[in-house]
Length: 114
Image 1 (cartoon, rainbow, N blue to C red):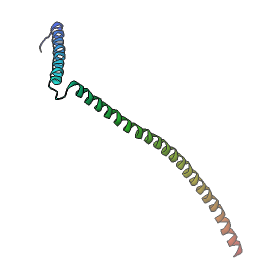
Image 2 (image 1 turned 90 degrees about the vertical axis):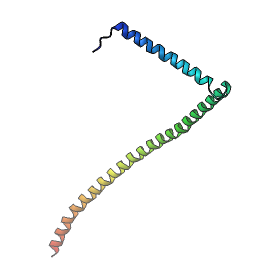
Image 3 (image 1 turned 45 degrees about the horizontal axis):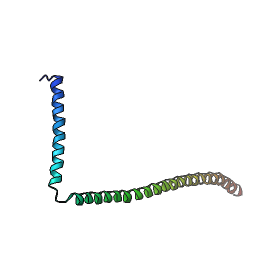
Image 4 (image 1 turned 180 degrees about the horizontal axis):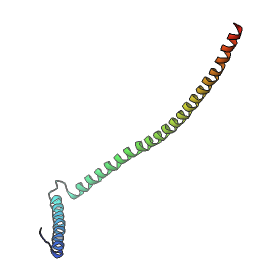
């Protein structure tokens, strides 16, 4: 392995950072100089794009809120349906138990009649 001293490592990091900064600034300058629009038209285009992005956020945000409210409503309806179903099942079981108790009595009465 290569042994690199701390001084050489920090120098190379500094060199990379400075090169990236200078390269970024040079790229931005060249991009602006070669842009097909004037500065005013370019700023106007940027403003229009920003407005469109904000409009898209509004369009997306409102339906999201509506969906959250509808989802909460559906959850409440689901909970109520589960309670109603549980009540129905318990009542059905109670009716079945009562019916089973009455059937032996009816069979016993018929046997006595015969």
